Length: 340
Length: 279
Image 1 (cartoon, helix red, strand yellow):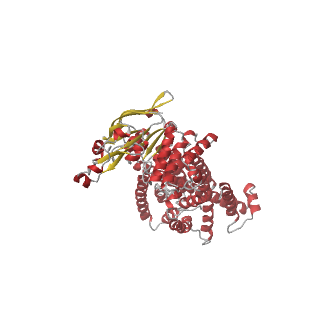
Image 2: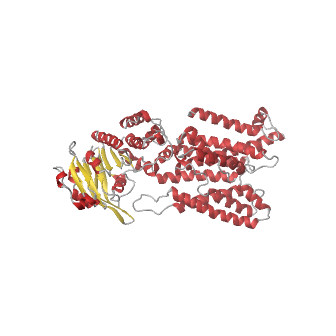
Image 3: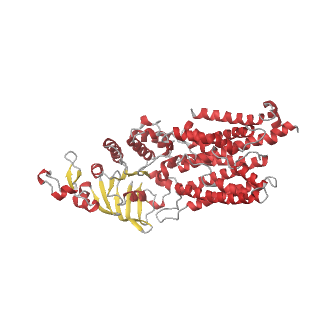
């Protein structure tokens, strides 16, 4: 499929998905009425449903899915590995621990809308920066800067992820039998149920800024496909570049996790599919992944809300349920898949 | 562009890898770095390419009447003067040949600047010089080893550099591809490009290099024209094997012939050696 056509399709799908998520629900509200209520609220119940519940939730899903797919695409490029995902630097583990601490302290959802996302955000940020520091080798006399090999980053991410998981388990152990326990567990499985406009005003700018910054780095990300030394021969400074890219992806992932919990597979699968359609050029891969990730999460959320109505399934259950088999399918049907 | 190395030394953690490397290379000259594994060929190339910083001595690039100390150049400035292909390059994703060759323009472009007519010309020319026109839209994974190596060479040529640094450009290639690569390199050198390449094939090096540097334990054991460098004594010192050196009857280039140790012990049948064999 051509690039122009792909973007046209993705753009229309994104718009249709956003509108669909606003119109559909236990109380269907027709398109015309929904649009009218978005721009001219009339104080009715319908108006509140559209403006305060459905629209923020759809937009948050779009932004979170987009941010995760974007971060995944960038990290896969950086590590030259299509198996990298946004949580590779231990962000999920750190964020879950942060959220668990906040909930265990009794500052969960009910107490404050700010404490939980803030705790998760800081936990994610802490984990990623620890991983980066741990993976950094000391400066060598011959090298101009200390190096961080992708390999040691991944190892440090795994090790630190385990450490954070043990802290989280410890907290869970002490909240056992408590209502806080289910809150921690539910948070860990991801949800857009907390969507609200204040959340959006934090999430949307971060997603947009991330897209912008990564788009500027896209060509250098392409050069990195030649390996660090190959990229260096083209005038790139991989250490600076890596630091900048890890910074942006950490911000994207931590913010997404802060507002929606840890949602798996979006960041892993979406760039994969887009790469199959558009090829590996990051200049189109990054924005297309962002759009596709956003669309995917809107529909995954719609499924989470409707499959077992009136109960709401955790979003992570749906994304993993769709993502894991699809991922296995990709692994098995694409020999030499590491090239793609 | 002239490249000068002055008493260059390099050490990893005070473990010396290169010592006292001094050499000068002129416009359009091909220098082949030869020597056993671990003799410092790749390390030397990486020092000249700015990947590693020499721990002693200095490297100068003489270009347009100016003497530029390599240590003072930014990576981007350096990439406009030097094109390089490291050993065993592996491309992480399945880009097309054309997409890869366009990457060669990066050092000439601002962060958000698009490729202009000048850049497209350079890309087109690099593809022509490496005979890759028909492969332009092929994914790199579908190319053979020789074609892939040509694509890497094209990336470096698209940089429009004044010098080329190549680490084993013919490794793992069949002889037809080896010759193809070397012919492209020779042609570029004739057009004025200065070339330094590490080669493990002494005979190929003898055919194509203007000068050779034989490295042994991080030092230059011999530097000069191929016939000056490739002597049985020097090769024995560097590689620890007995060889005979003959002259190619067709090109006159020295050609190293291996003598299996068991034959060396038995003594060579002198009568079968050519007149100009110096074994």
